[in-house]
Image (cartoon, helix red, strand yellow):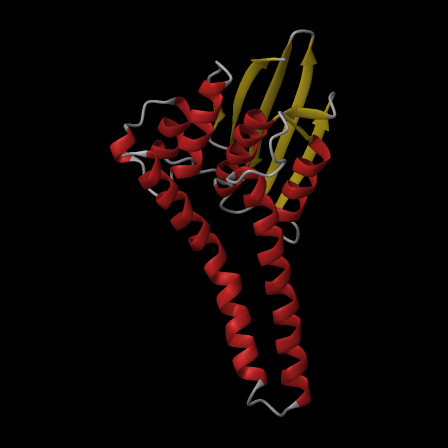
Length: 210
C-alpha cells in the first residue's frame, strides 16, 4: 500500500463518518418540499439543525485529525484540539474530560492524540468517559487517553494499527486513523502504548521530546 492508497482509505473513512448526517440533511430537504403539516415541518427542521451541527462538528475534527490544519506552523494551539473533541462528542453518551499543562503541541502529536481519541471513543459502545491528560515533563510531553464505560470493545486490528504490528497491506478504512496515528508517532520518534486496565476501560499513551 502506497501513500495514495492510504489517502484513499482515509477518504473512505471520512465519507463513512459523514454520510449519515449529510444523508439526513438531504432527506429532510426532500420532505420539506412536499410536507405541508406545520408540526411535521417543525420536526424536520429540528432534524436538519441537528444533522447540520453533526456534519460541521465532524468536519472540524477531521480537519485537524486528518488534514493540514495549522498550515506550515510546527505547533497547534491546544484550544483548537480541545474544542474539536468537545464538538465531536457533543450530545452523545460520551463524557469528555480534558486536562493539559501546556497550551500548544507539535502538529504530529496533535494528530496522534486526535486519532487515538476518535478510535477510543468508538469503543464506548454504551457511552462512558473519555479523558485526555497532557503533562509537561520538563524535556518531554506525555499524553494519555483513557476510556471507562459499562461496555468497552477495542478491536484487535485497531490496537495493532496503533502499536505498529498491523501490516500496511492489512490496513482498512476502519483502522486507517489508528495507522495514521502510528505513522505520526514515528515522526516524533515515539510509540503508542496500550495499557489494559480491565473489561471496562483501558489507556493509550505516548511521549515525545519538545
